Image (cartoon, rainbow, N blue to C red; front, side, top):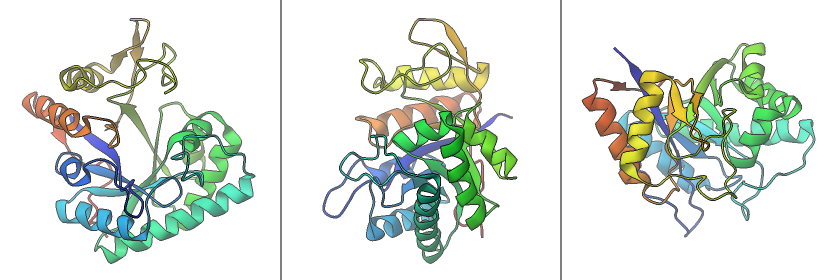
Length: 258
């Protein structure tokens, strides 16, 4: 029986400002990447999101980012490896505490936005992120693009590397994601997205922007919680996968697993 994890970026509000329908998305996905206060999120939002995930048996992950609230963590930030290490320690510690108070635990980490893109390609940034994770809790998994520097660093440090694919993002022929600044980089049609994910899971391929097939290896598939229509897309993906006999389950165990 085929099993796949569905993850989504959640808890990305800040103060009185909210983004996405986290409650509805949590009813569909199996893992929640919870913003840790750097690109979005605040203490109340982190705790509330962790509680909502734990109550549903959804795994909790720490969604780490460069400190860039104004840019939603999508702008490159030039920091030294030691500063990035400290930032990750700080964010991860806060998320672990929130999950613990919520009655669960953090089981994995996934960088966000510019940090994700940079650390996937840059060995120095990847090493700083993973070294911090290993220093805090070496039992945590690291979720990132297959073949990335992040997963290579995770393996070197003895952490579990977990490859992910993206349901609602366009791919370049080399397997990288199309830059958000380009038209068509984000997909919106629920049926198209669901069919795309089914092919990723069953055939291990996705159609790139040039029409070619690109190999996709994934234990988890991401549906972005801030994408317009995210709930409909997530629901369509889950419905189609379930209809095809594919089990949706966390790759790292539920949030309630201590």
